[in-house]
Length: 403
Ligand SMILES: Cc1ncc(COP(=O)(O)O)c(C=O)c1O
Image 1 (tube, helix red, strand yellow):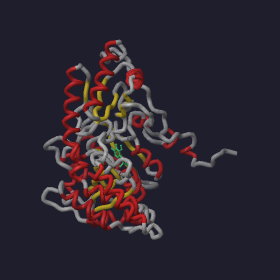
Image 2 (tube, protein in one colour; image 1 turned 180 degrees about the vertical axis):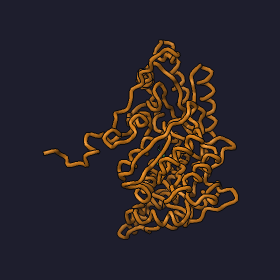
Image 3 (cartoon, helix red, strand yellow; image 1 turned 30 degrees about the horizontal axis):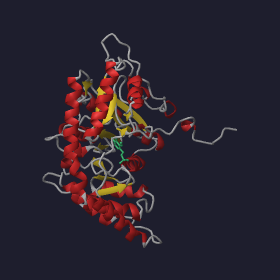
Image 4 (cartoon, helix red, strand yellow; image 1 turned 30 degrees about the vertical axis):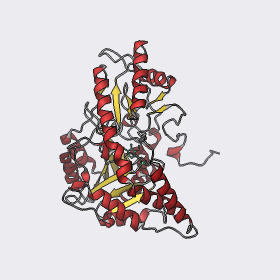
């Protein structure tokens, strides 16, 4: 008898996640390296203590106060439009927000689509909701070929298109024309597809790169998701959210579990939002640190993808695993992910950047970080074909990232 009695397509699959190792310099999961100030910690603690006094009661299922605060925050990026509380939804991390989107709008007989290399949780949301998964490809500079993307959307008629901007693991932001064109393409068939722009790293975008929040009033099939995990320095809080037309929010409310956002989470998130200027205050520093590291890596002769996020994809290495291991041996944990030969490093404090640079230079001087030459066969380790059994696009899935 087979045990455990799992769904057949899940048998043998490993839960995937970045290694959580205790090392001096952790630059592997795109966290914000700066923790909250003592004043912010005290405010969060007081808010949670207050919420604890009524833990015998279920929390506000509609978390109206939190949605109101998130709407006010998002309205800053809405251009001439406005985000209202009825347009906002939240859950325990944007991973859960997007799973709920697939639960409501995906499902058997429906298709979810993205463009690889991209965030590796996307095919997992599809697998877990029995949604068919299709992945198109990005160009060699990781941008989207809009004509090809348009054609793929028309052909596959996806119910949900997942577009991270900036993309993980490449850092590539999408221009508003691309979002608008894909919204129009997804609106051209019946039932209309949704375009989900995943702005988990949106606050780190470079000057002049607009947020898709600006486009919400123009496309009723557009959803923009965000998280407090990155720019807000709240990865441990587990609070992701989205903005969309109120009818889409009502549809998601059908699939959410009752009281999915605990009273403690709501209280802590509200307190953190009151400290938004402080928590977001490090974003400019991190963007400057990122741009400096991109320049430095290029001066050192590495290939570097342009980044609008708080991480950088760089390479390419003949044996990226050896480079990853060499850095780890020197106390610096980065992420072995992306297309073969590439590695991803999160942007940390100046001291962490220095540790990373020193370790990389040391490795190179010892000949252990050779860049790829055109004749080289790259031996980047490929991911387990977790998607095989779920009938996903394994070729694409092998090069995706989760964290
Ligand atoms: C592109 C992207 N979207 C969403 C998430 C999920 O973030 P969270 O669930 O912490 O909000 C991540 C996490 O790294 C990500 O890289």
